[in-house]
Length: 123
Image 1: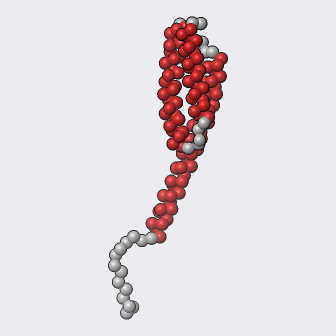
Image 2: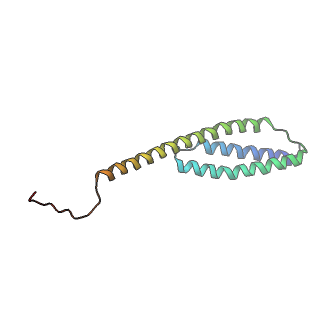
């Protein structure tokens, strides 16, 4: 293997480790999860470019064991992140529905009509 190819493979594995570390350091908040996904998208684009460069350098493509291991770890971590975000989304949607129902109940009990009401005392 040439030095350039070795550098490309090392760089790709470093990027994957960085992405894994980013996901594992997630604090569980929706906003930071979305930020992580956006940040990792940029890193994945770099991995794709490096993989294409490796294919050009080798003529064919063969995965190394470190890359395969990192991809498996990353796949599991990304799946857990997405499942957690989907659960949080479902909880948030449920909470929004409850607030809407509460508002509907409140509106049905409280009349906002400001019409004047006249009571005939003679009846």
